Length: 339
Image 1: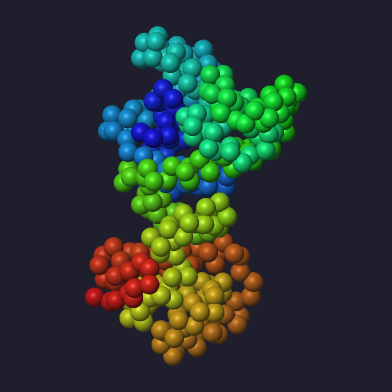
Image 2: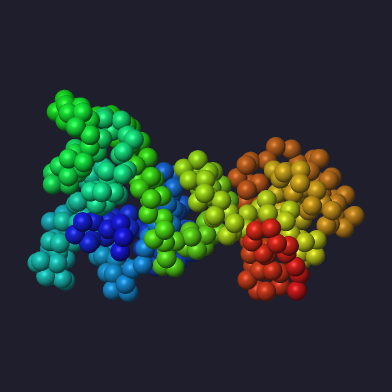
């Protein structure tokens, strides 16, 4: 599997991506609600670059996740010694120590984990145009053998400057480390995007994003617009978002609106673009148009989240009708038809 550590093991990010894919879109969407915005963006990118894994590897990730959850539960109930005692009785000394060692390691995640799994040649290409300070920072976190290989491939004048900066590097602001880590990870992930397969890849990302709330969906897509515009565009082409209602046929829109509450239509239109507002209103009966116009006039200020939730319910209606076969939502420029 491309992108693993030098010894063929899965990294933590790969395990997280495999776990989310294995859990399915609904459970993955629920987990996303408890993650930070940075974690959501990082995991989304990790899922798109996850390559084919065996059934045994997938089952091993799920088993490790369960074991880790149990270990954390025992630690919270009675501390590390209590957890060790329970696990040893249940699983034996070696397995208990292995689980707890992995768990304590997660509390000390080293920076550049995603980059450290790359081979020497990949890293050399990755840092080809980076400044000496960033290169010095990265090499400080690589294993010595790999760092020496990368250093040897650099121009001689750059080698001296990087070594000098490494020698004088005493402390680095955490924000700088995180920024450098994110930039290099995104660049490396982009380099390996041709390795996508049906195990993860674009389809898995689309399914998960289709299942999150409207606010999270907007954040992910807006972040990817900056991080990786091509990936963002590919995701949008393969999913249906609220603004895509303007691309539906009149028949499809009318069918969708029959399954949506009038109050949701009014609230959703409060934050809709002029194009979407016009399309929706033109597909309502004259009586409903008048009622919604009246409702909008007296509505007053509405929380953005309430608008996003109403829009998401309309999108869910579209997706539900598509899944049932009542409407066909064609991605790209093709028209949508009503069966």
